[in-house]
Image (cartoon, rainbow, N blue to C red):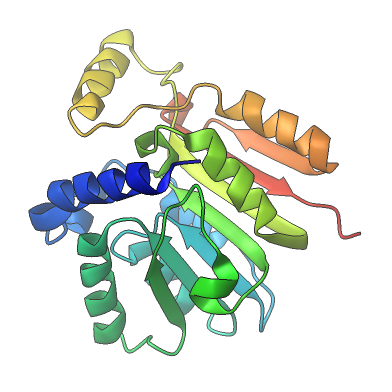
Length: 222
């Protein structure tokens, strides 16, 4: 968990990074943030349930999910006000203001009830955000704490590229570092530890020959 001052520094850094990038973010990322749409299709929220995205950015994923599952309610949080400016513009343009609500918050320490008036969520998802958050384990803890009983945590992010040519993985890793992105190679281990503690089930896969890693952690209903 970040302290208040650390959170403020992180927010300032993200705003500085995305102040101009936010305008072209979705256009430039769609070719290499693989698996996002598969994650959205796999959410399957029941009608009148609540879905939270941690690190929602421009709301690209929330908009796609709200269109696919119009009977659920969607929420998103992000530490960057710059990204949220674009998110709100995108949500308004798609006329989804009644379906999606976004707010500024630290992914490692947020109060969903204060932000959205929602105590627990039936679905929480994190798409290519853990690799940008240094204290990413704290995000996992907070995400699980925000889940309702029987709820699911869905995650997609960069993998270790173990099935791809070595030069590709090395080049990608160097390139990602330019954007302060670090693949979380320990993600599966951390999730298995959480699953054991919470008596949850875990599905974990490495699609696209290890380019990405995809996980679904499901809490028991009781």
